[in-house]
Picture 1 (cartoon, rainbow, N blue to C red):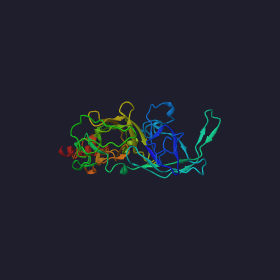
Picture 2 (cartoon, rainbow, N blue to C red):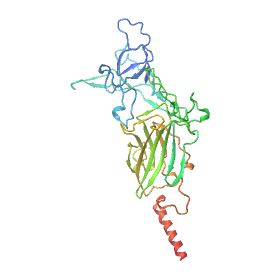
Picture 3 (cartoon, helix red, strand yellow):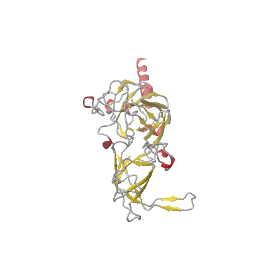
Length: 379
């Protein structure tokens, strides 16, 4: 859902690929009635499957966009607007202002429009090029703090070498005592979670959460599952605790020092990211496989997706000690998830000589040497 304010007395005569939510007062027009006369129109995307005479290229996705990494083809949306009373030259045409982007709900802040070189178009036969009178860009920036007053996800941890399961921090997203939902939280699944829609534009849905100590709609659980000679395995589970919302085309971003040696991802799609340049490769994006687990259902028996990951060990850095095996940061759908405090991470067994599979090779050799020395003394 996108909006702006006209700089002059513009009207929208017609549209392709989208529609204005309100027509406004068009009473001064008699022969032909504009599509919208609003001074600040709000535009929504059309649903897939609308008649061809209402479509243009890259339109009609129901307002659902993928990230560029997940699917470049479905990360672009377009609509065409025929504007009246706007002028006929790059001097008389004025840039709109006060752009807004809702997805749904707040979260995006849009800067002012700025002019860029005019867009050029090829004729169908490819032999002639025309150009627009004027082209401008608008950049909108997402902020988690504007989108939600509280965090929306948290992380829990466990490992094969420690029986302790570290839960999400208490009240990570909210507390049950002051939970703001009018219905509070639910200890059992509701009989029905269906909602109504006006059909005009997507609207934020109030969360209907399962009662937990952290009250987060989304929990990501990281389990260090197995250790091999040259590899180690992790299982990641994403659980939806919201009875009122599905997450289509979700994504998960992880930061971990061993992502540069990620060997295989079994049930998610994966793409490495390099936010700090090629010198540091510790960030990756994960998302669901189409028609398999790209839809995270609402809370309940099917409200989770999971995958295992196989990492190759780097002898110079690998360790199960001091929380190294757990992620540094976790993001779900762009929101930073609350991590447990480092001193709560599952620790290695407190033994003089831990099991050989739990320690680095040089520590294993030191323990064997110590044991051999004790045997010599006893003999």
